[in-house]
Image (cartoon, rainbow, N blue to C red; front, top):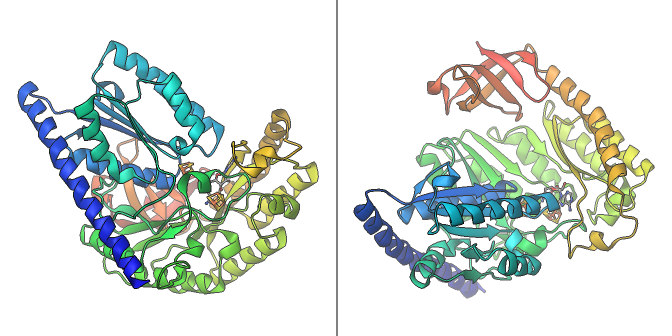
Length: 478
Ligand code: SAH
Ligand code: SF4
Ligand code: F3S
């Protein structure tokens, strides 16, 4: 078995070297273009969807930069446009089609040589591929979630052949490490600890488009975290669809609790966050590790989805209303002052008014500082899309609004508790509205704005909270 693991790594390394060759070839072409025309080719990159996609886009951007393109935030001056798509809800897909329509016009009227690339979760669905072939032939390169690192090869193929390049895989072959990456922030970074998902919640498309769960080895993860720390990064966000089941299937099994403890020891790192934590796998060992690790932020995203045990059963979440609330109690007992956030779906098939009331009740009991709330959206190929009793949109929307009427006052109260307190704020950026204001997050993940300048960025600064704006706080330096 050891051999398998070594072979996989060797295959991954060989693939990485192969792609570096393609990077060099594309760079030569782009450099020649720049020498001839006096301007560098530009790329525009858009990540849609979750933090996984955001992080994947950092890698796409890293590869494009190495290939000699320069990043632009103006789509209509780009020579290479890449959308990293999401299909978690129908809206996400509609948005992509809308934008592709606009790009057709851009290519026809402004830049016929622009290359349009599409990748990410949406392209993994066979029906989408058909639609692209039929209705969006101006898309030049299409690839998926399993072969992201092949962008250099696909780009060169497109350049040399001038033909549309489709390359979608149905599963992961090897995990390719050390793909170049263009980090969005100087002081904080995301790190994948695992890919894919095995849970098959009945409403969710992710397992179909991201494949089975695969963990990276603790060695690879730690090496990456150390490298980031050496590069000045202070805050790490560990990413996985279900971090609580991290490492179970590794050759040498590891646990997420153990990984957190190791990362907590990395010099230079000041804060560690993670998402997402599935309630069914949140162990006592992990709660203890969180409580004991000083760098691990006292904030937990614990998606409940619904407060009704019957709905949870049909969602295939494998916990009940009671076991969820018990977890909340345990977490709060181990870490007084911790903030909790959640994801909630309203209008799941068969949801009754009583089921919905139970969701409201969980919101009241768990007292979230933030909640990401969604209207159920049927996804082709998932079991829930086939269930009877799909909830009419007007009823779902009406429930959704009633939920916000319960949720928002609680979010306000939870933030209000901080007024007068001093919070340690890790400053991320200058406010877009006011250049005299900086913003960042407290350990408990609350967003704080306070007067400051660019020197504050990347620093952790004690701030007294003076005002509560429900979804964020206003403070002043002490
Ligand atoms: N792995 C994470 C969730 C990733 S998807 C977890 O298990 O918590 C992010 C959120 O999108 C989910 O938590 C869920 O609330 C929402 N979501 C997923 N599929 C959806 C669908 N078909 N309709 C509406 N919301 C959905
Ligand atoms: Fe989707 Fe469930 Fe996996 Fe989260 S745990 S990605 S909701 S299937
Ligand atoms: Fe994320 Fe959307 Fe894919 S939520 S995993 S980008 S379907």
